Image (cartoon, rainbow, N blue to C red; front, top):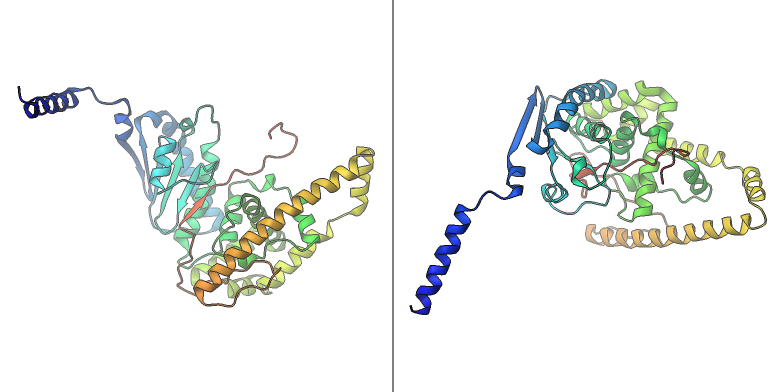
Length: 352
């Protein structure tokens, strides 16, 4: 038989084998199921049906609770997708997300993508807690047409998901004393990519929302969101709600943090540690300071590049990075997705 006929016969045999072969094990993952309620749609695969049976009643209850707490009731329907695998989770989001990301809300798309807990061997987390955090993002995004400061987005999400109790402000106090907190205007439309600074940005967002909560309670935050929903810019909305400009509120928050610093407690702690306590503490503080300094330099370089692209003067050397807030109707860059970041667990619970 000529070689080309043999090749054709082999190809036909392979094609028949593929057509007659049983479905692959992962084929069932592509068969999506749907649960729907007014304003809510949940898409999932059959493998996650038991989880959905437990999660669905809580999901409707939590969404209503978040809207009631924020006093925002957007009519737009929310789509939630439960990704069956880690690969499917990243594929739906169009790329690799930061490590530890379990849920992401896509701004302007009214879509929330949640990773199934079974997608990581041995992985244990509370999908309801992740959902509450991302539901806050969804309600704010759908209820307010203009861009909301990213730090306010994240701080409110931490508040309504009851993660504020996890916040440890000890590090913020030290940074406030030395003037190394990130200015809030720099966190309007993006958080730093560097891991240490990104964690600091989340902590600052939660801390400042806690400060606002002490100022006027939940009613003040609800009034602020109401003014933003009416179309007032953040500066005007803060001035109308709290009676002073946002930068003045930020200064008072920084002063309050710095005022908690106690040199006496620092000396007492080092004496209890013994003779090596102070050197070890100074070494740890120095190492942390060098890490922060490198991170700030990297971010300052990024800011100079962004300023060059926008045709603006670069920030002065040593000046904290800044990012001007976009004007009304602007589309803030780098804010297409709001990922959930695991909160720091409270001390003494045995977790690392």
